Length: 219
Image (cartoon, rainbow, N blue to C red; front, side):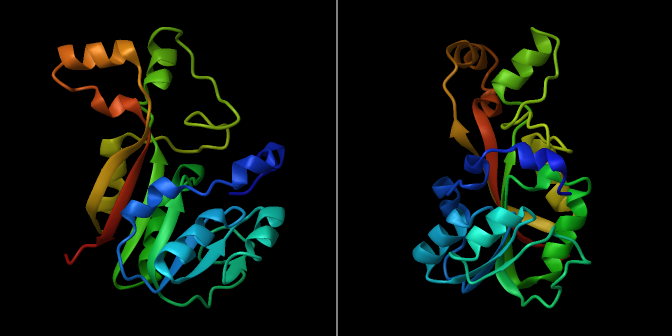
C-alpha cells in the first residue's frame, strides 16, 4: 500500500542498485518483472548483466517516471490484481527486493507473481531479517521497538520476517526454495563470540537481509 509515509523518504530510498542480488537470478532469463522497482537502477543492472528485458511496477510517481527512462516498461501502481494495466506478459523472473515486508498480505503478492511466471520461472527476493543483531539488542537490552526511516525497523514495514518464516511463506504459497542465504553481513564482535559458544545457533543474526530464489513447486 502506498501512503503519505513514503512521501517523507529521501530520494536515495528509491535509488538502490542492489548488485548483491544478481547471484540469485537464474541464467538465461529473457524477461523479468521488478516489483517496487524504485528508479529502475536494479532493473537496469539486470538488463546489462543478463541481456534481457525488464518491466517495472512502482507506486511512487516520481520514481516510476525516472524508472521509465531505464526499463522497458514501467507501471505506476501498486502490485495487485486490480492494477491499471493487468495485461502483463509472462515473465521468466519476478523480483521483490525489500518489498514483501511493505505489504499487508505478501502471500497474495506471491500468488499473483506465480500467475505471471512462465513455466520454470523464478521469484527472486530480498527480505529484511527481524533477527538482525541490532534489532534483537534493542528488544532485549533496551526493551524497545522503535520504528525508523529505513532498515529492518522501517516505519513503512507492515510485516516482519526471520529466515525460517520467509521460507515458510514461500512454501505455503506453492514455491520450492532453491537458494536462501544471508546478505549484507555485519561484524559484531560480541555476537561472534556468543555464536561460537552457542554452536553457531546465532549465525543468522549477522545478516541485515536474506536473499532468496524460489520456483513453483510441482505439487
